[in-house]
Image (cartoon, rainbow, N blue to C red; front, side, top):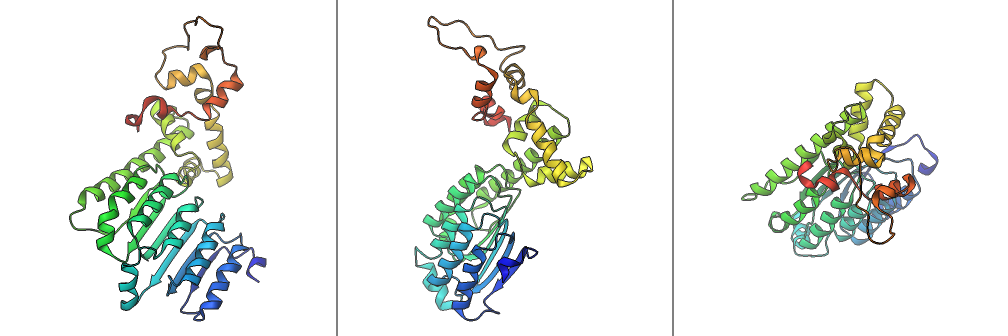
Length: 301
């Protein structure tokens, strides 16, 4: 019935209401074909029983329209002891979270976070072009303490995260300060990108607009400041990316600070094509793999 109700976009699945584990497992199978669901909150006892975790992980991996995910697991004392000493605990869920790059918000409570799980999540966070909010609470502070640096490395490579909630750990203030600075950096990028879309084409804003292209927060700022709807804001953003200063070879190189006026190459001894001889189509193809920040380096952020 759920796949036939496109009006339903937000759901809560709770084992307190679905006490039968088979019904709970079947619920996740049904969700796979419910592409209209964009927000899901899961509250589960025995979350890391294999059949429940496998069904939930399978859904998360397939749910490309899902944007907002909360997973709250409830573990009793005997199970807690087992999970803390099981290196594979939560592995399926962690792999699913890391592989779904469409998610914009992730909240997970009582996650077994082994060193391997941390590495998988770090890689997923680094590769995500959509994740803007992240909150994780762990089962074992001891294992988390030893793996925090790995997790931070993935977060540091993400230019879109604006909110990060992690457990406070004694003696790990350095990592937590790094995380705070990352979110400040990203918030600054978002603000500068919005200014570029609104018409302020300062080079520092141009560098930002490429790094956070399509960020929902940029679009919401543009929507508010320009008093337009979401579709018009997206159109304004796309138009900004097509401006001459970002697409023309000479204008781009001036923006990046490489040349003062125009690109001129010293003729080579052979007959190979020089940069200033490229057609517009060839340059635009190269441009797909190049950003202003690539030219200037990380210091421009």
